[in-house]
Length: 111
Length: 115
Picture (tube, chains in turn orange, green):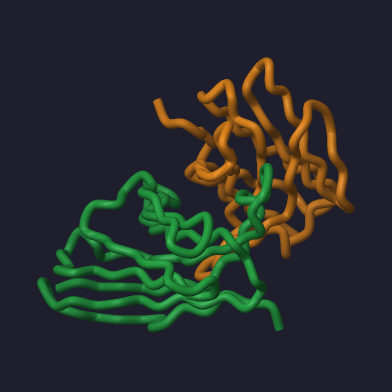
């Protein structure tokens, strides 16, 4: 079992709809959780970080964390074609010095 | 401009010919790390450094070396490259602190092909 798992997709959503991405992790003592966006041929860029249970909103993005169930999700509201990218979930361990990435979910927003 | 700079961006080399990929950051970050990205395997950590002269292995360190003599630089060394090291390499950095090692700034990537 991979330490951080994501559905590879592609997740196809119509423009204006909500894209919902999920990520599960295996290490119960994981402390910090991140979502990165990676456009094709580009480097990953941080879009959201979340450290405690609950929801965190930033513009059209909402990250949700449930440590008891060991999952973290990302919602993209009012999806735009420019949101078409691969979204990487990343998790740090208890010491905070090792970041493990999931395989990524490819999102395709269709006009 | 805050950035992480990697060189070379593209390199084709032959088996056994030592090479170094340089990485430099201008944000005074303490934490630096190298990742490789392969189709179907995602991003995997090779080595990381919490501070100057402090380095540690990630998940796939075999065949690689690193050094951290200065805060801004973290070169990746392939002493004897092999074809299975053909990959896209990313250097990344962040401020150190609880959880901060996850808020990474990435370089543009170095695509390495070993023949």
